[in-house]
Image (cartoon, rainbow, N blue to C red; front, side, top):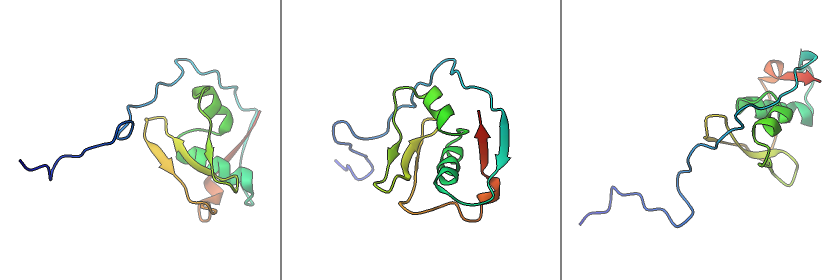
Length: 108
């Protein structure tokens, strides 16, 4: 018997099914949308949320009310579940360099 092509997972590990999202998330409409001009931690957070298909933390909390954001000790987002059920993993340091002008900042 050859098990070279089989993937064996330990109990509780392995691929996870896509998360069930709230059927009708109540995300408040944004009163104002602007683009980021200078980097700060809020811009970095929005960059990471938008990479995971969310507008910002408000929409993430509305769609995933029982899930907390996993963060590094520095406060930056470590990993986040995307809307399609896959995961985005981020480094401890800043990742928003060249795409700063693409980050949208929402005001409610």
